[in-house]
Amino acid sequence: MDGALGQSLLQTLAQADALGRAVALLLLAMSVASWVVILWKGWMLRRAGSDLHLSTAAFWQSADLDDAERRLRAFDPQQIALPLLQAARSLDNAAPHTLAAAGDRAQQLTRVLRDALHRVLHRLQYGQVLLATVGATAPFVGLLGTVWGIYHALTGIGLDGAFRIEQVAGPVGEALIMTAAGLAVAIPAVLAYNVLGRQAARLEADLEGFARDLRELLAHKAS
Image (cartoon, rainbow, N blue to C red; front, side):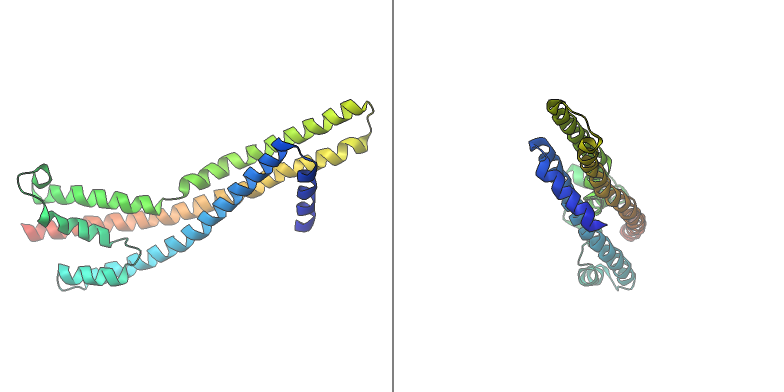
């Protein structure tokens, strides 16, 4: 089945004009880009989830903040939880009489932890826009190739001046391969967007909980 689809696609490309080939190359580029993101992000989120579980457990077993930071450096190579602790500890180096040092300790912790959390979440969400874009546009790109291929075939029949069913069946069938190719590109991207999005959302919830606990700990310690 896959061999027949590949052979039909090659035949379509061989008979296509510049626009048809451009559509096929665009679908190929979208497929490669989405699979690179799927494989890389799947690995990254799996490692991030494991690192976050180990690093937060190590944090709460630490004797003090210095020991906690050393443990996080060892257990958090993806730097998921470590940036939050480093941002909170950076308040000790804030220049006095500046807006960064204004407000009470809890407000300062809220600000720096929020900024650090947003930076980490931006890394976790990286690639989601590409997957959503591929999933939403690939079927229409394939449909464009199909419509153009059918138009090209019908134009050729009009120039020939004779109509036979075999003249239509072959070129139209080959043009429809573009629609199948568009769906083949879009479906994995949509599935990956949903699955990886749920994994990132779970990590986001765990990180927000850790940031809230860290804020309460350091605010209480300073008071």
